[in-house]
Image (cartoon, rainbow, N blue to C red; front, side, top):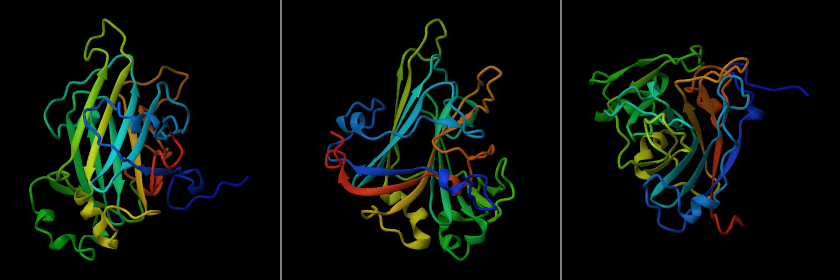
Length: 281
């Protein structure tokens, strides 16, 4: 069977996953434990695979998405026998620790979030340079190009993206973001073996306006609306040869060392059904 893909992108379109995000009908305490019934019964992603090769990864990693009228909720389950983290200052280069990452793409901008097992956060908003003026970002004071922490970004391993460069706003924080981390084991203690760690996020829909603005997407989404998101895990170690472990794992592989390719992100379809109504429990 032939594999069809867009000639400009490294990921075959038919291999990009689709996922249904159901509503939550109970309060969620964003503490990292993921112990509410909705998190126990929500459909999880497939097991993460290598970002570059798409092959099975060494340890289990899963993610899931829920939502209500106020927030988008994301959970990560990370198997890890030695949970370690060192960076404590916000917006430190968290990708230099073991971390998990969330990318959310709008039409003309996308958001990057990273967190380590200490709960330290790194975030950036990227606006495609070709849309900075025509989509109205240039008229918003928070997106001045001459502000500190703003610079051009060409991508990582996929530098010939058809849309060209992004303007990165390292000075931008997601409004109202809440994050929790729970370590199932002992952090930074290699004398024992841990089970892993979990991450819980709540991202207010009102903070997504900068992503929804160019095409006037409704917030919260209507039943059947689709967003593009991807979910990653980056490690400071690699599985020993002969495994070809890139050190980065993902819900949907990009087949290139670059998480900044929104065309490779899974399709997240929002349903007005709750998890219970969907027959999950």
